[in-house]
Image (cartoon, rainbow, N blue to C red; front, side):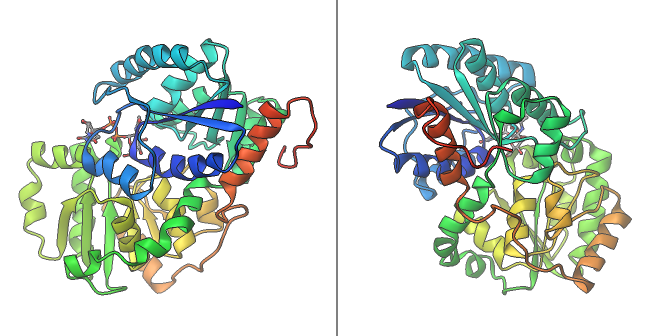
Amino acid sequence: MIKIIHVAGARPNFVKIASILKACDKEPQIESVLIHTGQHYSDSMSKAFFDQLDIPEPVINLGVGPGSHAQQTGEIMKRFEAVVLQHNPDAILVVGDVNSTVASALVAVKLGITTIHVEAGLRSFDRSMPEEINRVVTDSISDILFVTEPSGVRNLRQEGIDPYKIHFCGNVMIDTLELYKARAAQSNILNGLGLNIGEYGVVTLHRPTNVDDHSVFARIIDALEEIQKDIKIVFPMHPRTYNNLKSSGVSERFDALPNLMTINALGYLDFLKLMSESKVVITDSGGIQEETTILGIPCLTIRENTERPITITEGTNKLVGTQTHTILKGYRESLNNPPKKVRPKFWDGKAAERIVQVILNSLYYRNGAFANDNRT
Ligand code: UD1
């Protein structure tokens, strides 16, 4: 048997871990131990995802909760180390780029345990993003790196990572989308919100650079004010954004916009349904850029850069920056020239299966009985 500790802490982690755990469960040689760091803790940001994506109860929730980056990262490290020592795994698997990812990878590597990073190699080349620091650090210390798109392979090689560590296996977030899209189609969210198919836009915002800086947030609201004159907008709100809205005193402005509806953050199935039937998605999320590419929905990304360039070159994504006029220009262009639906290589619902085979080849059949086809 090989024992793998899987770590998940924040909303996008849960979506990724769902398909990895299912693929591991099909292999009798793998024993999976799930640990929740507690970085995200509210029902809407955590429990809803466990329930809807059939993720098993974690063996422990470290309960770290909010804090500064140093506090959150340090607290996860302290609490995680004790649990790792107790379970003595053969490998620790981390996903994505959140504080939980880097904290647990650091613990794993310092205990000499094989460290696996799923969604490696993505780079925005913007070191002011906390996630970029998390990506660079996690990749530089991990032993097995699973990449979602060719840019990830190039980035890792440029950073001098041993090519034997790098495996291009596809996108586990899309595995989960494929697995749950039929169930999501049955969601009643459109009726509940009084929306018609193809006649509304969806907005999500949570990046500190967009919502913590009041002048940037105000520019984005200006753009949304114009867009809601054209179509209805639904804005499921991340707790960070909600808190900022209250503290910056712009919630009255939001309330005054007749065609903009703010609602609580949604669970996976309702949100997938909402995106799938929308006219346009406006976001600063990483994962949503990928999901809209597969759904064929125009995506306007309110950022100057993306670590997921394939969503632009092959997908439906457009970087529109954070200026009111650039957001509005991007909006008009997307409506006049809707993108085509495409599917980047290995975004086919089978990424987790490939990943598990590489893990077995690397750890279980480590005497080289199997060739590794995905090695780059
Ligand atoms: C984190 C990730 C980001 C990811 C995002 C997805 C890092 C550095 N950032 O950002 O990469 O895209 O998650 O959501 O790890 N909060 C709640 N309820 C919750 C969770 C958070 O109220 O369930 C509040 C916290 O108390 C805090 C704020 O939201 O005030 C931000 O949470 P935090 O974990 O710091 O990071 P995110 O902004 O969610």
